[in-house]
Structure formats: structure tokens, C-alpha cells
Amino acid sequence: MKSLEAIAAEIAGYDPQALRADAVGAFLERLVEPVREAETVALRDALDRILADDVISPLSVPPHDNSAMDGYAFDGAALRPEAALTLRVVGTALAGKAWQGTVGPGECLKIMTGAILPAGLDTVVPQEFTRSEGDRVTVPAGVVQRGDNRRLRGEDLMAGQPALRRGQRLTPAACGLLASLGQQTVSVLRRPRVAYFSTGDEILSLGEAPREGAVYDSNRYTVLGLLRRLGCEPIDLGHVRDEPTALEARFREAAAQADAVITSGGVSVGEADYTKAMMKKLGDVAFWRIAMRPGRPMAVGRISAEKTPDSQRETVVSSYEKMTAGSSDAVLFGLPGNPVAVMVTFLAFVRPALLRMMGCTDAPPPLLRAHSAEALRKKPGRTEYQRGIVSRGADGCLSVRTTGNQGSGVLRSMVQANGLIVLHHDQGNVGVGDLVDVMMFDGVMGP
Picture 1 (spheres, rainbow, N blue to C red):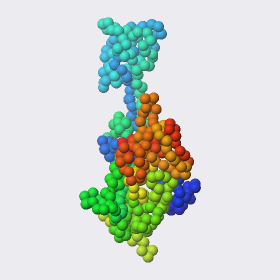
Picture 2: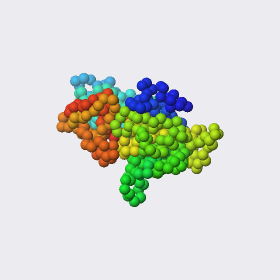
Picture 3: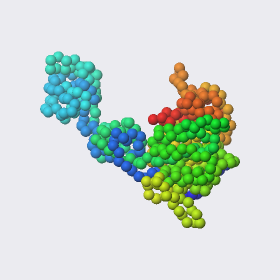
Picture 4: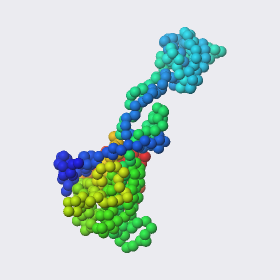
């Protein structure tokens, strides 16, 4: 396992005192390892899980050439340009059963959507395009061409070919695809277990009486929602006051039972608290000042549930021991304390890292391009994430405006916003009408 120093050496221009936001992802990609344990779940419980193995199709979908329309099936070789075609109807083919019989020259078969096309028939004319008289049906000139309205055997999937790949998230469409293959169960990767807690003497838990200078803990509930939407297994370890013994116990408890640990608060430069010292004591942790707004301070690394007095490793006995064998190290994400900064750093850095831990190989949601509805002040040299509201104008173009006050404690603005305006590191001021990138919440904060 590489040290943080070794990982940092691989990142071009790494500077923890002014780390570019776009370099954080490269660091985390090297730090975080995917979970390896798999489990089998019922297909009805597989939504949003990550595939542990390739799924090879056991059958062809569809299994036979079949009709895409209600209409009449015939041999398309009989069609002539400029001439109508009259055929005798010799039977009816229904979906779910093979029609028994033969269709000769000058004949056709009435057929329902999904019904198997008998050998020799390769074209279906929709019923509404024809004229019928007795057992005869006429196909007007030019309404169909040979091969129209035919679904080919295996055109969706051919037997023996990969249907889904390891690392894919099982969307509703993917679950439907597995059902079409007759799959009742599917092998998926274990959900990462993520422990989280808030730190600070100024934090109130819900149910406590208000007191001067204290604020209620919103971060735990924000992080809980983000973890659940992402598909992790959240472990709420509550709130810890700035007391060394309590902090150490909570960190060890978290590392013993979780693959990753998220804290909020206690990572700012110069803060007179014990959180940073405890992170250093328990693991290999880097403290960053990221060139971004909001969310400049952040801690990243690994912490352990084990302690090493007098060079002798003594394992902390815990009822929360990891279900996985091996190291009790957990990846640590020490986030800022301000509510908006917590959400922004989670979306920008923690979410992609946890997706890697989940084993997900899906491409990240693309940034949208929208015209700024207002002038935005921005100095090159840091990445800014401004809360924005994207809308579509009468001309069909997307535009975005800010929610107003961009203070990192204004959580209401995250509720009002439907995305983050991403002003990149080297970008300067934005004029009215200029195109900007937007990270939409739908897809990163929603299903």
C-alpha cells in the first residue's frame, strides 16, 4: 500500500498549500481501492447496485424473428415499385405461439405484434395501410419496403455475448435487460460501509435545547442523504465534542467498522481543536488547502483502528469489526464544517472517490453548458462552485443565474439551486451571456 507521500509524488504540480481542485481527483483515484467482496441478490433488490461480474447472455433476444406491428406478413420479394400487391390471407399468427403451416407465393399471414415470423416471411405491412376484401388484402405501392417491421433474432442480444459489464450500475433499464434474460438473481459488489460524524463543541444534536453560540448539526443529515442516494451503507456515529479521549475512541470505532470515514469540522488551518491532531495520530493523513471556493480546507488519508504503543501493534477489540478480512485501515475524508462547503466537497471529490470504492465504472455525469444570466466576478487561480438555477428560455437555450448570497453557511441556497456553476481554476470574470459549465444536481444528488 502506497503512502500518501508516494501518491503525491505521482501527481504533477502537487502542492498541499495550494492544491488545484482538478488535481484532487487524480490523488483520490490512487488512494481509493474498489471493494472486492461480492454478494448475490434478487433482481428485485438489485437497483443501483454495481455488477460484480460480466453478464453473458444465455439466450438470444429476441429468440426468433418476429413482427414489430399488427399487420400482414409476407415475402417482401413480391413487392414491385409502382404496383400494388394483392395477397390471400391463409391464417393468423398470435404472439406467444408458433403458427403451424406454410405460406406460399401470393399468400400472406395475418400477424400480431411479437408473433414469430414463419420461415420465408420477411416483411410486415401495418394493418392500417392495407385494404381488405374477403380473404384478400391489398398492399398499396410504396407503403413498405422489403424487411420493414421485422425484429431480427438476437438484434438486442445474441447468445454468448456480454449483456452487461462488471462495474456497471444497475439502472431500471439494466434490471429490465437482466429480466429479459431470465435472470432471477445477480452478483453485485458489496456496498461500501461509510461511517460519518460531526465534531465541535458548538454543535447541537437534534433534540438538544438551543444555547448561545451553538448551531444544530445539519451536516450529518446532508451526508446521510448523499450516501444513501449514492448507494453506500451509511453508519451514523453522531456528534463528538472537542475532547481527545472521545475523539480517539470515535475515530477508532469508525475505522474498525467502515471502509471510509467522513467527518465535518476541525480541519481548518490554525484551528485550536484536537481533531487534526487525532487524525495525525491515528493514520497517514494529508491536510490540504485546496484552491477552491467554498471548501478550501480538507483532510484526506487513511486511519486505523489499531494503535502502536512501544512499537507493538495492539488491535482495538470492537463489536463493529469489519466484515472483511485483512487491514482495518479506512479511507478518511475530513470535510470543512460549513454546510455548503460539506456538500460541495462531497460532490466534487468524495462522491467520485466513493464510486471508485463501489467498483462503479460508469462515466460521470457530463457538465452542461449554459449562458450566464448575470456577470460573475472570478479571479484566476482557484475553482469556484457557485449555486445556480438553470432554466430554458423561449429560444430553447439554457441559461443559469446564481441563487444570490454565496456564503458557505447559507444552506438554503443549496435547496433553491438545481446545480453548481463550475468556474474553473484558470477562468476569469464571466460576462452576461457567456457560456459556463454547470454540474446539475439531478444525477449527482438525485436518482
